[in-house]
Image (cartoon, rainbow, N blue to C red; front, side, top):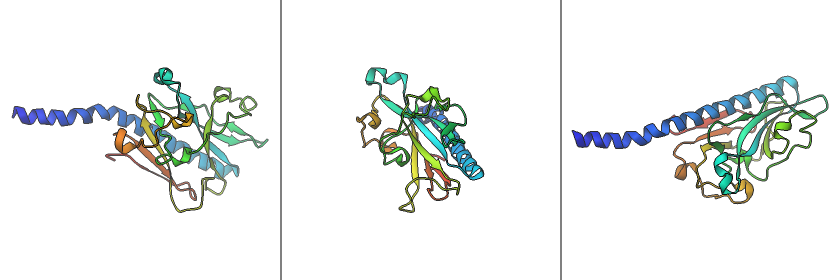
Length: 206
């Protein structure tokens, strides 16, 4: 009986330990999905493009590791009368150590060189991120996105929790072999259809 109890505890402890982390990732994914749905709704109702931006920011634990930056905040930007993208709300920063994995295999939505900083940040009163580089998804008035339309495939965005072995490819030092299956037992992948902006997601155990 004691041996069986010991085995059960050894199995349960890792699962229980990872539960808060998984719950946090799920909550952050919920927020990103809500922003996507809201951005699409505003684009369709206003007849103007709306951007959802993901900003590169450092986290305190990386200061001793060269100040790597990760996509870990987001913001909806609407088109104003001058044709500039103006913030619809404040920047939403991910809680704890949640980041968007910038490996293009798992996060094709933020693949490639980031844009910015936004030269119009001061003009549209968005100074909080005036120095931040970003990647953006545009939601168009017809309900689609500006993501590539050459193939019938979903674009992806994978949220994980940062760990000390991770280096950011945004600064040219990334490990493209990093993936949820190997180093991240908890992750959430959001998928979006570029034609309809329909969103679905995958996360272990759900």
